[in-house]
Image (cartoon, rainbow, N blue to C red; front, top):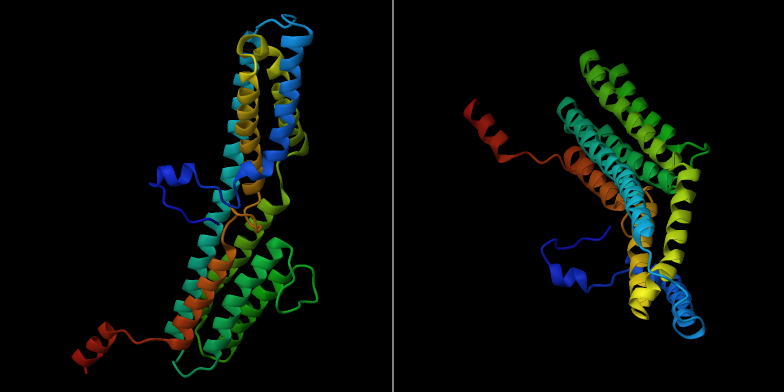
Length: 292
């Protein structure tokens, strides 16, 4: 995911980065420009005056396609934003589990490091699962996040059986552990439910025929300037569709996808800071001194 300064207007306008759609669409833009050149040349040289400027119906089609692309883009962004919310919830839930275990367990308990590792491991396994990649720790099942979550459940259940946490504390942790599975299921719903194929193909066909018809409509009025107009319109419309395709699955490794690696590192860092390093804050030391 790219980080950028939202206030740097001129820098953003003239900046070409890895995820810029211009690079991806440049071959197609060239084809559209050559086709437009052929139409304009035929209208001005071979069959002069054959085409007539009739843009009324074409403008109506442009309005319809703009509505379709707006809906397409909004739908894709909603999926991207929901994925961001889910991973934000995963970060918060992981912290809650670590904080509660930190408050329930003695500072010398060795199980603290095990729980910290399993919290971080769940985030890593979920990330690899959503990306279709192999986890660092091989699991003999297709759904590795279930085993990673099961390990955390077993950790907490063992604490309860050993008397290290009470029944009330166990039930409190159980709610947070259940939330991990809920987050995993919600992420899988986004990944495994793409935009319907028919709708996806229809928009591409509509954009194609709209752009192909533009030279025949505007060549009599704009002449060779039609090449620039048609190429630019194709760039705008195709860019919206390309961006929507990229962000509708926010868990991949494309430029505009969510930074799952950063989230996983953050969860690991927080879990170890809370459970393994367990720093004693000055405020706690002052309180202990006051009441001693």
